[in-house]
Amino acid sequence: MVRRRKTSAVIPARRLSQAAWLVLVAVIGVQFALWALPQTAGRAPDAARPPGVEGFLPISALMSLRLWLAGEGVHPVHPAGLAILVGVLAMSALVAKSFCSHICPVGTASEALGRLGVRLLGRTWAPPRWLDLPLRSLKYVLLALFLWVTWVALDLPGVRTFLDSPYNRVADAKMLLFFAHPSHLTVAVLGVLAVGSVLVRDLWCRYLCPYGALLGVVGRLAPFKVTRDAATCTDCGKCTKVCPARLRVHAMTRVASVECTSCQDCVAACPVKGCLAVRPPRVEPGRWRLRPALVVVLVVAVYLAAVTAFRLDGHWRGAVGRAEYARRLPEIDSPLYTHAGGLAAADPSPRPAPPAASHGAR
Ligand code: SF4
Ligand code: SF4
Ligand code: SF4
Image 1: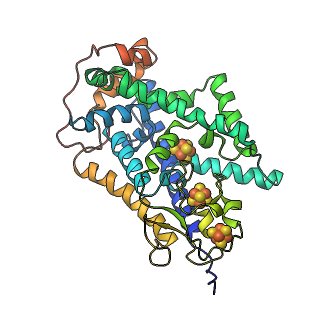
Image 2: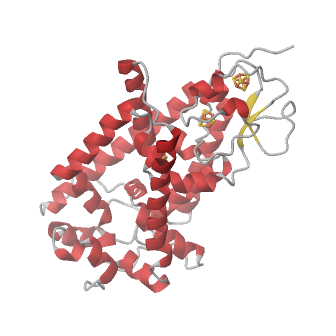
Image 3: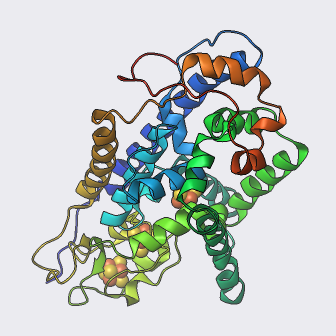
């Protein structure tokens, strides 16, 4: 006899995680603006610099990852960026692409816009397969470009030069200014993406995000994936209907697609207890499964554990000190701080030694 399941706690648990990270990112953004903007005007900062902002420097983090994997240790400029990237990769490598559906604030905003589209229009538009497939390949083209720049075009000394460059040392403030004083083109692109995400679910994530493409590839290796028990499945199709990645879950035994974000919306929709669940490979469906809400706790714990390990090892606050920022930020619009300068120029300024114990406001 088929056992009906109780209402799943997974959706509230996941939404709670998403909301908490969204609030945290907003707080970091405001704090960082209070730190950076006064200094670009030559004034003292109104807040301490939050290292978590380095999570928004993926190129710098990828280059640091390359040095770290080559055995060169953690580069002292923006170490929090590397810590966050390792946390993101770890959780996505354990439970496929789970960063996207549990933590990423852009993914949370994208989901909200998609829900708005359904509320306003009754449904979002799904491009036909002949268009969907080539559009989905765009994010892999962008990923290949990023990997080529960070892992192929530069040798290890080149990577070090970039990480030490004036551009990279203030890349966080450059990013803030990009959004604080957007060009007409930036406003137009962001507007198109926001409106487009109301009309087409997960427009950015599904078609354009290279970070998500990387996590999808890493997630292919993940031992924990959504698995369907064909013996108890009633073929009702509810899982397929709710899947935001448009996967035919009801026809799969194990969801191994690079598009699956382990959101577990399908698990929550399945009326048969234990039929759909996140499981390791080669485990008999009836014998073992990770409870849906526990998956949420697990992936967030893995991320926090990775970041905490870096922090405890002294790799959180970077080597760019308060005095250096105070000197560089007022001149941040000069050619010294262009991206090309970052790849080509040697830093003419003396580099302060990394702090012995890196605590206190910068
Ligand atoms: S695809 Fe990119 S933007 Fe979307 S949730 Fe994943 S990492 Fe975030
Ligand atoms: S298959 Fe399930 S877990 Fe994966 S994206 Fe679709 S609904 Fe989410
Ligand atoms: S929701 Fe999907 S997995 Fe669950 S019973 Fe229906 S078809 Fe089977």
